[in-house]
Image 1: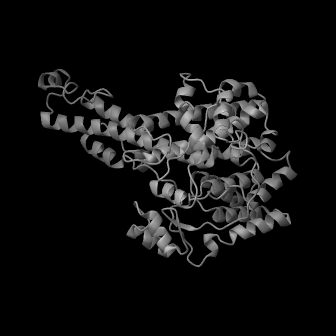
Image 2: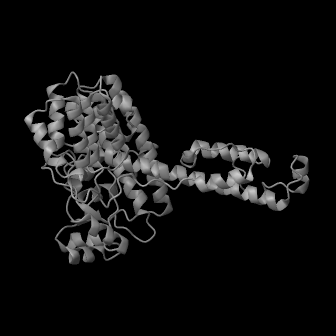
Image 3: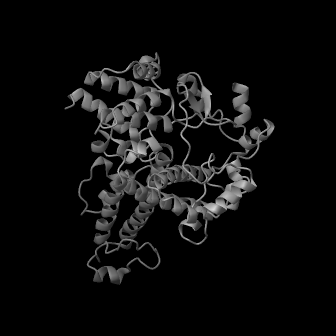
Length: 457
């Protein structure tokens, strides 16, 4: 039985799965949780946590970061709901957070529509409005044309707003999935099954949520020495660990081996759904403005934000899906159905930086350019068997196994812990006060970010 203080710390760790806290701050929460429980830590775990928690905001003189500790949330419909409450007498009082709940927004639109005899989805201003005779017949003849039109227009705008809220909430979930897999979808009950498992999940998720750095090299690896120490605690007590919860965020063979076939199949179905949802988002971005597949360099009109968020989510979902297929021993599925990876769009200044430093296109770009599009493969419109992927990889001298084209991602070795830098548009700035000032001034943004960053650094 957890003490009240330990349970609150565990709930704080669970809340961090949908936030963007620095790994150092999560490490400090884990430290506090173990202390509240009176857990005797092994020297390796104690040293690793102390090394990370040393840089927690609670231990720094400034005590804050200039970077938001949450993923961007869509602007809700609070303003529209307040206006609707003033125009429609049948609407009840709504809680303050109703504008963030699509179900409540839709319920308000439907109930308000009943007052002016409008059905949900009737948005044509020329065809769906009632004229004077129709309003009289519907029992609202006392309402003037001006007042009726005002209400009709409001409900039409609210439906459009509802669609935007749903779309942006979906994008936010896709972004979290790309960086932290299914961590944000873990229930508290499952997360809190085992403290050591919860500690590992919270820390590895915080590492995954780290922002990308503006560089022409590789990004920082997620799995570090702190994660390794926390995972070792699970290895030392495999019967106590909640491996099913860990598999939501870390689909390696040593984890999946402890998960039942039933739970593996449940995760596989879930990732199947994620692949299909993300494929729809990719297809929508593609249809609005087809990309330059041969280079994947951003051009005017490309929705690079949506594409890159969806591409990262696709590759994460694909990696989990491949790992589960292998663990279930269903390798023959890949012989017939082996969807390829999706590269992110690259800014033209970063591409130029690559060329100037002797680099070129990422090897994955060549495979992506030749293989069928993901949504076409999922719908069965085009075939993408493992043999096709292997032949494309061979043509471009890419190892399909090491490159995770035909198998799960190889297990990475733990890297040394490094503190999280203050970033302004991906550029590292030492001091959070300076980072806030540079962000407000718009430094490092725009087409000349690379030159500005190099000059500053």
